[in-house]
View 1 (tube, rainbow, N blue to C red):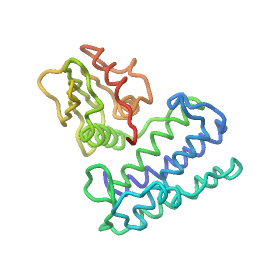
View 2 (cartoon, rainbow, N blue to C red; view 1 turned 90 degrees about the vertical axis):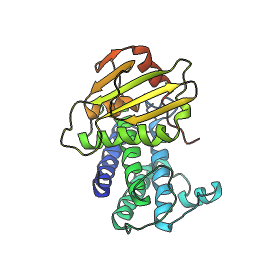
View 3 (cartoon, helix red, strand yellow; view 1 turned 180 degrees about the vertical axis):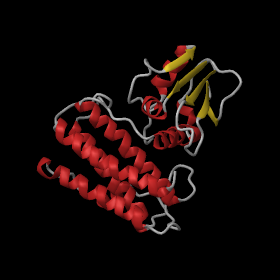
View 4 (cartoon, helix red, strand yellow; view 1 turned 45 degrees about the vertical axis):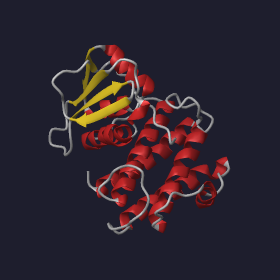
Length: 256
């Protein structure tokens, strides 16, 4: 996906995020983030938007210290100001990414064509996934366009787990194939193969000759399922379903 498409997705997700937060109320629990209330999730995403913007705006090439990060983000607002605070940070980030020079150089933590491409992509998916969390606190979770879903699956598998596969350890080596069944006209891959082992995971784009379990579905459904934001019960899963269970148990993204 082009940077502009990621920024558009970030903008839409932020608007839907606010809508869901207002419908749910700040004290509502978030089923897909059971340790958080809506209030805490709004705090988190608003914090992340300001944190990300600092690197791009300041062309910061080194990671912020804890003190620098706190100063960049500022204090959490009271409830009466929380939505306005979130919207200000979200709008500022969208505007910053749209106007930043393509040659912007700054710190980033996953492989990307450029730092600007990284931050636009990462914040698009960060906000979209947490939009799904808040919608789940209200009712049904909306899907995503096929190109965004394919891109988000690729970021998750090749970015997070491709570079941090040590989290996906299992005693017996096994393979999980993922196949997107729509989005034929979209750019990017439509299949991936995850091999989990005692030493961690290795992930490649494309299908291999034989796998222990194969999961098929639309880009939107697989995107949400692989991020553990929806069930896989109604998706097309064949083979050893314990392998899929191992993924869902182990595939959680944390900063450390």
